[in-house]
Length: 495
Image (cartoon, rainbow, N blue to C red; front, side):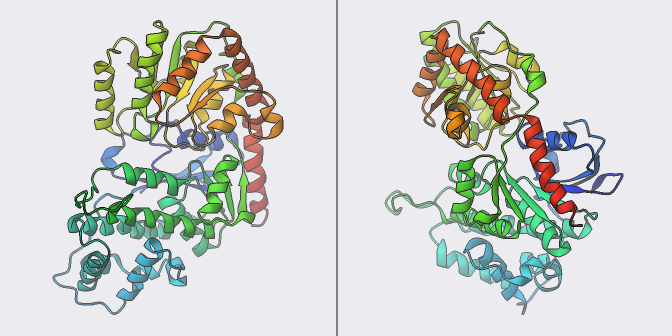
């Protein structure tokens, strides 16, 4: 549904589960981009999961956000069920659609055409026809007969059904000049459809590598557990239902890479991953995140508060539990330390509850505090070290925001954290470290990083100075906005 419609759209951003209904991360990036380029009119298509999962708009709407279209991919759509749908002659097209996304097949031309999804491969055919039932049975018996049929059946239905929702959105969207997606996945697929059907430029910016992050999600989830006994499993084997989801997002990722005109990553390591997943090297480039260093520099202070702050959502991918365990070790060494967890807890309430219980069981109730969402300007001056314990990241804005405020960082070796803390190019590396990088899921190493910084004031000062210099040299808002404005201009002039 259209929430805002007040002008022509220059740049249409496809927001999957982020701006303006979720704070932080990619949402902050989108908000910064829109606010920073006031001479361009932006539109946003928000793709949520289910309406009940979002409390409302979390950002002040910028004046140049002239269009907001909202839809929910997993909201049950009322499709009138026929009494009986016999075998469909056109069902071969749906088979090809499935194999394109899950078996790495070449992308048939028909899949790019919006009319294909109504006239040839309709949602009703996919959901209710006898052909669909037989195809799912056939694939199950071939690939997953030792797994749960219910898991497999609903996995196939749930992963594909949003495709028709995206086609419907693509047909109803207001005209635009450029489409820009901050990820592959469903957002990237919609952007691809819009580019191919309306012949508009498509810019892709990946913050984290979507395919990789969905793999992590699938491997960690418990609702697609294997039904095999330990004696039936091969070493390293995962349930086929999980493998199917992974292949699905790999297929969509390749389709998105092929459709995009520009494929942007935030750091060189991410660009190399894009190439490994099938991106054309000639399309790729790196544009780091940038921040307003002027305002954040006002938060720099001389004293070192004994506070270690983790700013992020309380979800498994942020590995909050490892941070909590590391705090127990660090506090044993430096009793005055406190750990602050600053971020929302509503995305995975069960995990958040487990984190609270872990704090209590480790006797840290007065030492590790859950503060919920906070204004970063209030939190950074009260912190001594910023930390990330994540198992996956792109280029975390919060790290460079911390740098601008004079905070060294101790982070796991994910995403661009190593480049941020130790330097990217050779000139950058000469500046020295701005903190410590440690192994994933290792509370001992994380704690050693905290103790090293707090236990050596001279080293802390060196890291602090490096952090400030690095962010002002390589990660300013001006560099970031100029880079995107140059790309937008190139395509807008072609209009």
